[in-house]
Length: 350
Image (cartoon, one colour):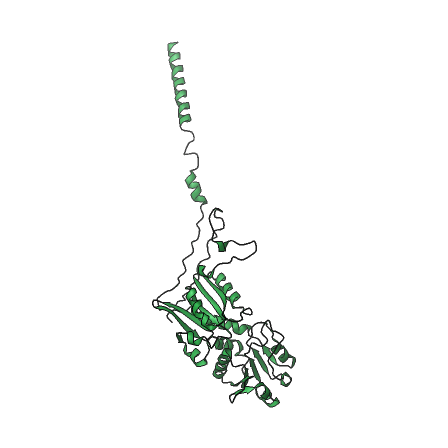
């Protein structure tokens, strides 16, 4: 009897100790998943964008403005984080950023500029290639304002020049590319930030755009009339000279070297089978105007080229086509000269 009570007491003591252990140590680590291990399995690596290589001192010939990896999506960040004012926007509207917030600034100077498509073209390229840059229009009431433009924008790396400043800009530049010096007009400026200050270098890419856009059409032609005597006219003359095409200027103000519109006789129109409009006549929004040439003397032997990019078909081109002439506008020329300008801005060591 005593032995049975002893055994029963031992069993009760064992059960009490077992229950206490369970209460003090709930859960078995060997049976339940580790929380840290679960988080590691669910963790997704986030790509980190490389910083933009901006101003290399190397002469390797690599582009100055490299593309960078697509930016990480940060839209899921907490709403309590303060955002710059330029990041806030109404639904469906693009954010408006100040020019100073970009690593690199480019632009166009001239007046008027509402017709220009350069801003849209360059900014689309910057977005697609993830380049920390922006292109803006800078209407100047006078060319002397270019100094203030450069001084107020330390991130300005280059700008294009359009009417009426392609020749007026030259005295404000530190030096000219040899081709621009020969042409006597500048449509592209590179802004170099040196230790001693800022240097402005002038180039001309209009002649490159003209050659690449119209070169094939000009094969088989030997004489051309250039309407206008402004900056783009000089670039067109340079291109025609290089292609071996004889050419003459036509202007309202005639001289010994420049023909007047009144001199465009039937024989002159037959002799010169290429006519290039280098004036702004017919440019948007004044699309109902055209150069005052005798369109009735045109034929299917003529080639009419217009450097105007907006609209796609000017009245000058339309009138030419009505008389059987071949006509082409300046949109492709604008694209080609822009590509050449970007190559200049993107070169190191100049």
